[in-house]
Length: 80
Image (cartoon, rainbow, N blue to C red; front, side, top):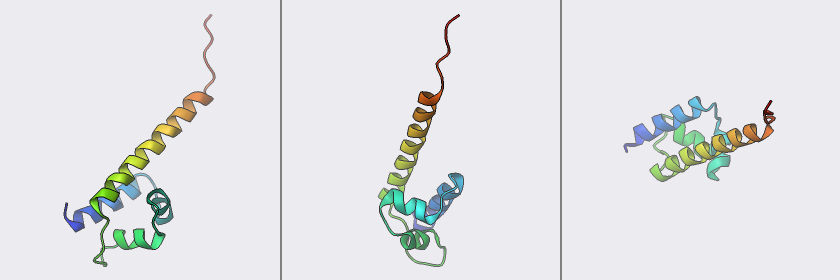
């Protein structure tokens, strides 16, 4: 994947999931400044493909955990 495309993909993921640089940094174990550099069109740095894939995976896991917690919190319907 080209560096411009990875930057675009990162920015789209962040927008789609309403993530800020500190959120992505927490998920990937990097500094927020690093994420800002990856997302900036004016810097030559870009997110490595493996970290972009890891971010997608971690977001999917967080969504699954959230849905699992919601289903556990939902009261069971009683049979009548």
